Image 1 (cartoon, rainbow, N blue to C red):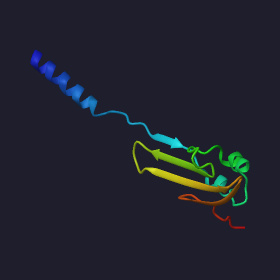
Image 2: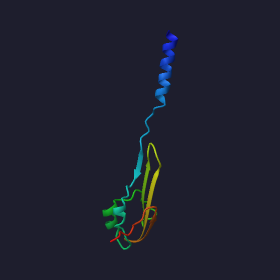
Image 3: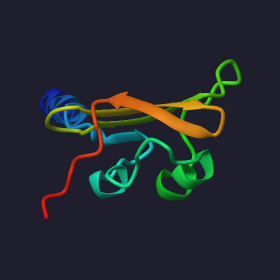
Image 4: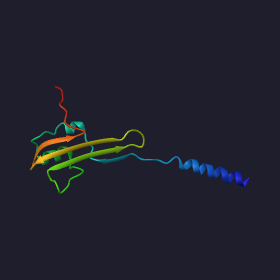
Length: 107
């Protein structure tokens, strides 16, 4: 009788170990398309900071390149990555690149 109880408890413990919760992982700047649409060449660093906030990655080696990165690894489903890289000439935005870019809004 004791062997059956021990075996049952052991099976329940092993089954419970398979039900581990895995949380979604979200890191970086949340990039909203409406906010990104407001960005255009000729804007200053302070204007862009007002719209998008501070970049998640800002290196002291190149103060003229700002990186806005966003990653979402959900517990279920596909991984989401967004990247926006801004290139400045002094204090003025010259160009941008990445997986999310300003879109022209239809009038």
